[in-house]
Length: 320
Image (cartoon, rainbow, N blue to C red; front, side, top):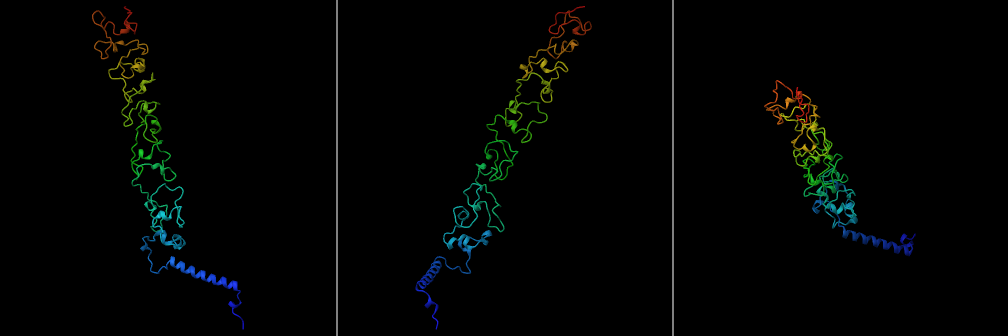
């Protein structure tokens, strides 16, 4: 008769086998005490955390690490952060800086929805837009944006869209042409006075273009380019008839603000005849006219230049 396998087992091996059987029995009892059996009719919704969306496809162990059920987080940030061992996707390093809970913007409880579908909730945000809108975390200034270092909220007053901007010119006193170039924003219109000067040389208001103070400093010629009654006031109707004579022939640079006090330069005007157009009694130009008394009548000397050889004064006089 053959002895049984236990009888043939060495004593030390038999002791080890008995110890392992006891340890397994103890572990089973311990785990059963810590993790109660899940009944077939268990409803996860009763825990206060419904399994929806991506959570329906997870295994229990991904959230309940080491079989521990008590104390499992119910808020998104309890699992979706770097400091937890729970197998959940974490915030990426380039995530928008925020302390708000995930579900403020992310709604991944819906079927077939990913973290990429975000509905950013700007409620309560009134400043510091650039911390996100920097073309890293979120779209920032486009390449054709007005050059500025001011915060977004200085001009943009809506978090729903970039439209409806009210540019705040407070503190802006120069460099207007950087923006007002007809590319970024409206610049000089086609009928603008021809000039290469900066906007702020003449425009003294950032609210309206109409408040203009023309700065004639340094301008000594070419007046008619502007003073042509189209771009700016030109010769009035009662102006001395001096066709093709530049304004600056008689109007000195010191008179460019009012045009008053002009000194008629007959040399520059190249006037040698037909003087009576201006120097006639009752003329509308307010200049010296033909005197009465002994002065020859018009029918005797129809033109001043027949006797007066000097356009600076009426002397000397040549008399036939």
